Length: 264
Image (cartoon, rainbow, N blue to C red; front, side, top):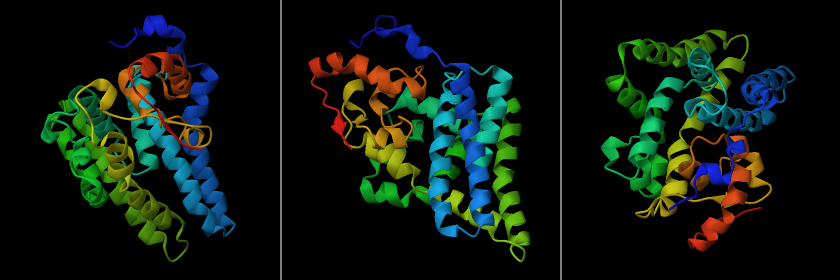
């Protein structure tokens, strides 16, 4: 049995105001950096900036979904919408399907649309990208309460509007259309990177259903999201505390025969 969070330390649940502001500001700062790079003609730099935007959005949205960043209900709804908008995705669909993933994985794929790529194999997960977010949205919409369907419909409309605006502005600048193209294409790696690789060859127990990657560089680049096992065990712990959670869990993991994967 895993240690109680009270024994590990409830300080792991803390999100200082400065940390919360930084997490919420990162996506906007990334967009500003993209606009500046494009305005200066540094197009070669924009994919790297977009990678940073993806990591920033996924991290903060993850914490908003689990209510671990300290936002109230109303602020959480707007954060889901605005963070999703940055990547032309549906934050509300992600909340519905991600929480279901924590409840259901590794049950039947139809019960867990987010975890479905873990059942597909490497090639299948890589090819599943173009339909992944569409399926998540449709699963969430069919099960949403009436009050949530408005958010979902608005979020579904935003990619169409942004891409349309990008096409209209193309004679003036490719800035918006290139941004939208990278956002859409970047989302196609979700099934492979965020589902298949952490979960493939999963076992029957919570300790064998996903993995954890430890190191100095890679976890920092991904803002600690590589601590996937720790997150599944204690989803209420915010992402900026996952590294510390991992350190406190090390004796328990070692005693249980779990060996973290080491990266740089």
